[in-house]
Image (cartoon, rainbow, N blue to C red; front, side, top):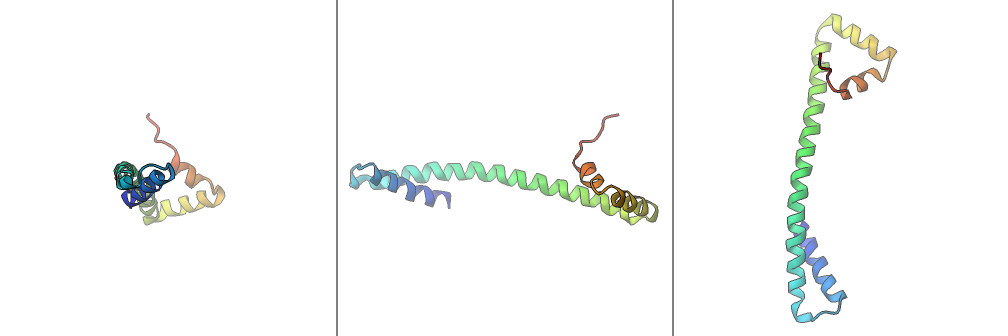
Length: 99
């Protein structure tokens, strides 16, 4: 998708700069190569970011699921989250303490 957009943009830029129309394909190819490479670079970063956030969310819900599995901790966790609604988001976003 990035390569197709780059080819169209490159050919359009070539024509907008009043260069020789016989070589519009060269502008299209330059755009295709540039935006194709850029899309691969950005795709890798976005996939890594997506999976790291997904893993963090799975960890938080897994811990909450384990807490709610047992009656004693479920009551305590529910009581804490009702008395202080921001306790759960703060606890899940704070880094672990090194003791």
